[in-house]
Length: 120
Image (cartoon, rainbow, N blue to C red; front, side):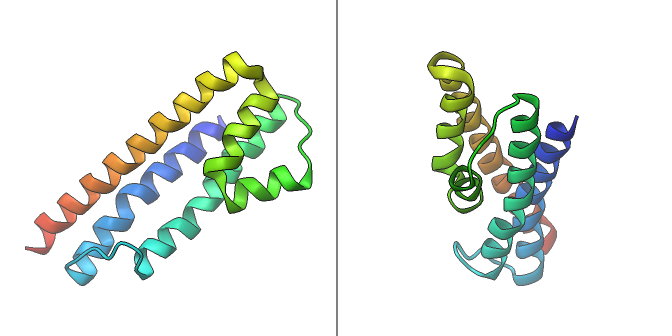
């Protein structure tokens, strides 16, 4: 259940960050303060999801793998999926990660659109 909460929190951050930025500033800066805050806030639910999944898989990851998930999740998570599940299931989870990323981008666009509607 912890993984579901982590993904829900990540979805909320993806949606609310651009909405709040648009309402507060009237525009979205690609790598502005709000964008950097969103990235920083997203680290916790991503790592939470990884931590719970790692425990469920009984997978012992080293410090480099753990730090990689914090620093460069887009690279470290696919490595984790292959190492913990093998090539076939790992590849499926990489596709699921790509789907989660696409959903996150769609939520950001929805948050920006709603923020624009509120701000105008």
